[in-house]
Image (tube, rainbow, N blue to C red; front, side):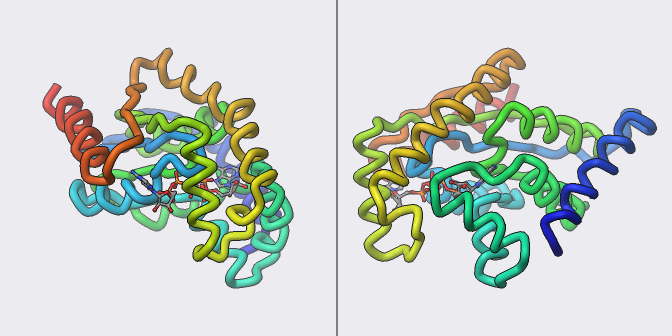
Length: 221
Ligand code: AP5
């Protein structure tokens, strides 16, 4: 796998979308986005939610860290952005998500964690899911104060080995990138009436219960 392959793959996909976009029957899927700033608990809650609802967990952060661990060209390129708290280019992460969705053709649904992070990524995800005759059902956003986020990430940095967790200026940069580039994604899904906020402070189990309640209400409607 390499960086340019993903870009080529995504360009091809865009062409395919325009040429052969037509609703295709897909088994009923449930597709959830767990949204929120760095450190808000997306990864922690995702583990519990995928177990409860049988979803496939797609975390772009985890996929990128795998590429880094395997020392692939894509990983080496992505690391330059990640270590400085910047976003990896859209084409790269969209291509990764496309391949991952393709690998799980019979999934009951997907839980997207850390993706989409820009409006361009959200639009691309709509196209990818549209090609499969499905869509995002719900976006749940974890709300946590900035000081709590910094505290959690610095604390995790003591043991995680993540370079982006050990340096407070890099953590603050990640939060400012979230405010500038990622928070508009919330408006995108608010317009589609798919967006709901959940308090992200409290015990892990309390937050999990609140997320479950929001999902169950949505599934029952
Ligand atoms: P990514 O891996 O997605 O990191 P992130 O969004 O910065 O999120 P984190 O993993 O830091 O936090 P989280 O919300 O998952 O919280 P967690 O559950 O771990 O992205 C890393 C980088 O990759 C980006 O900066 C970017 O460069 C790149 N990237 C990734 N996706 C991209 C994309 N789509 N486009 C472009 N670039 C992309 O919890 C955090 C800590 O808090 C843990 O220690 C946990 O134990 C603790 N905790 C959790 N819940 C609680 C609680 N309730 N109370 C107290 N502590 C808690």
